[in-house]
Image 1 (tube, rainbow, N blue to C red):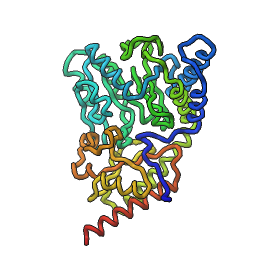
Image 2 (image 1 turned 90 degrees about the horizontal axis):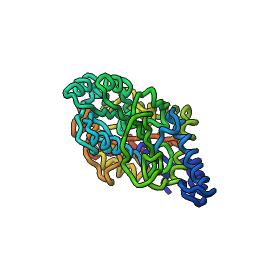
Image 3 (image 1 turned 135 degrees about the vertical axis):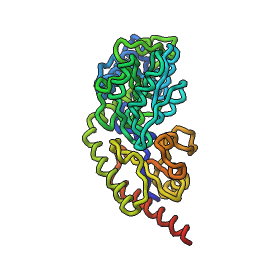
Image 4 (image 1 turned 120 degrees about the horizontal axis):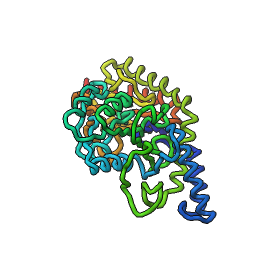
Length: 372
């Protein structure tokens, strides 16, 4: 049987054993976390233990954490809520689709490395007097480029704007200090850091109003109605706790990622590594292989037992042009050959070596076919 290698952790990371254990224990229990009897209190304890773990990961008080069905819900909640309150939305051109599609927004350009143009942000905020919400992601899901969120927040404060940060890709991969980001709202997702799919969180600054998106119940401090998904939340908490404790170990991926890129670029110097000149997440590499479309590469790697992706994994299996690479000024033909390799908590050096060998072999086969 062909060995399988999973290198698509930015799409969804492998479930951590701690999360699996916590979920199974919760699934075997009975009780609604809103009930007052012992079964309900036990479920409530699981939810609150998880809230404390997620809060610790973000460096905030537990009361600021509101569980959601995922980061897409959290992003939509903030963007649509602020838009309905009369705020204009100002965001970068490289945000996740769950931000860009949530409301009409003034989009601020990035440079060729994918970094937000802070001067353009300040100019955009000064274009009209209506209060704004500035939404800037912490780390790009396609390139791993880290955005200057704190600097953007300082500019936003001078114009009286609120600040939202999608920190989905940063959390659990690098230290996260929500207060240092100076954001009013921060979105998180469990399955990006080794928790289950279908659960996330929104962290709110104390005193900042945001009308609930879901009403009809008093759950989550009356901020998000609906019976809590106790098992998923318990898994989120366990994964957050494990990720926080493993940050130093996660940093080892920088060596693996650099070796991956170094071997490929040394063998084929015309390889494009997007965002290589900027600070990036240690686990993310976005590479262009001239002459082979991303779709062709994904099929070839899949046949070799290696899972990677092309851009964001949020398009129902479709491979579309990357708005992120387009915003960075990439030529269409180059962007069409880009794939994303994202490492995770269980990635080994053997996984990296196998991927690089497969990448080089594929490139050489293609060159031989073209030459023939």
